Amino acid sequence: MKLPAAFKEKMLKLLGETEYGELAAALTGQREYGLRVNTLKISTEQFKKVSPFELEAVPWTEDGFYISGDAAPGKHPYYHAGMYYIQEPSAMLPGQVLGAEPGERILDICAAPGGKTVQIAAAMKGRGLLVSNDINVERVKALVKNIELCGIRNAVVLNESPERLAQSFAGFFDRILIDAPCSGEGMFRKDETAVKSWESFKCERCTQLQEPILHYADRMLKSGGTLVYSTCTFSPEENEQMIMKFISSHEGYELAEIPKVAGIEGGRPEWADPDNVFDAAVCRDMISRAARLWPHKLRGEGHFVAKLVKKGKTAGTSQEMCEYTAERYSEAFCPIDDEKVRSVPKAEDVRSVPEVNKVRSVPIYEDTLAYGDLPEEFHRFVDENLNYLPVGVFLLKGHSLYHLPEPSPRLAGLKTVKFGWFLGTFENGRFEPSHSMVTSLDKSAFKRTADQSADSREIRSYLKGETLMIDGEKGLTAVCVDGITLGWAKQTGDMLKNMYPKGWRKLT
Image (cartoon, rainbow, N blue to C red; front, side, top):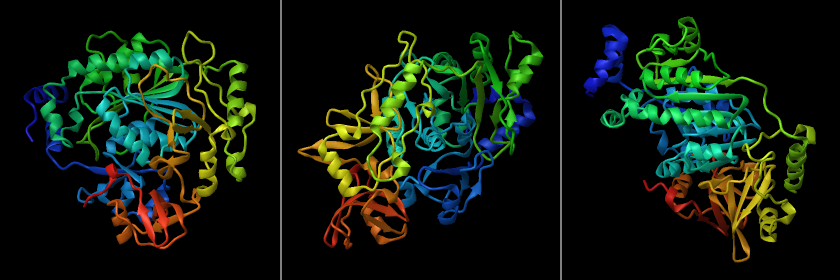
């Protein structure tokens, strides 16, 4: 691989001849491969016991592992069951640093193709609201598929600009992740197309995109919230300098320390302030808290990560909003006979909800339905096929039924690609379940299952869309691979008719 001459000139000036030589040698060497366990589907410990690959732990995240470049993880049935996400090891750090918790409201503002969204959702454990956005309409398609593949139930997917988001979500989010569009220098070794596109997608153009994204993210982050900014470039203009510019123009932020493990280094203060605007000691203290991942220093590609905390107490809301939210929750719990999923939270356990925008004192929420108000077709479907449904609220949009763990702010006027967990549609007097319904539930949720091993002929045939010759109880059946849900099928006597989505089928 031939590195661009302008890149070489710039990095030589920044690093010096010795370190640049080390970087250049790393960029022309072998890349690292990794996967991250999707703990919405299987625990890390369980996966280690059944993994078909040799695993070596990635030191900066508990669910990430190095694998061989010859492993072909995208061809294994476990991938199609959403048991893991294929991800470059350095790219696992930003989502880990974000520190997502169950029940929070989180925005992944540049989310496609979805690796960090999946990581955040796993940490949220199906609770709270995750808004995943990307401005690129084509990349959003991959984001939606990965969300469905990995069984995420609490995500809303939008296709909007940061400015439009800020008009609807002012002061709304507990945490925001910006995996910013960048010049991509850190990906040179992983993807040679990044080298070819570098000349047209230069640093100067990228900084013009990054600055407004940070600005609008500030408007959407509540007091006391956390903002994580990351890039996959070495460029100081897009990293240290961008962070210092943001802090100087937006009051109330401080950089939090990111642990420096396994070769992770701090940000480089000497690159942060070329115009000598800031106090040198202050700049050095702050920027060193950020993280740089260099391919010649550790086992991964190039990344920069900064964690910023917005000072102030977490903003609460009026008692009226708490009561409204509690009422909506209590109306919407599913009637399945299982105390674990039917328990209704007390009003004091319901989280406060910040204002959606500066115009309204109380957020406007999507209209939700109680289970009893849903069409009878859905009641029949649940009684015939399911043992339980997760707690949450139901939303009916035309003939389509959706579910979320809590009410969503009204999204009118926003380009909404995926509205929470899509359960299915009402057609000709019956309820037709979605593929995402089966992939987002545990095996225990279904009254009928067909569980096969990953190396079985039946699983290979199922992924190709073929009918299986298997005996079983007549009716809708959840097909599983080693206990993990994979898709729907319909049992009729000694045949299991395949319902795996045509666009997802594995042809070889």
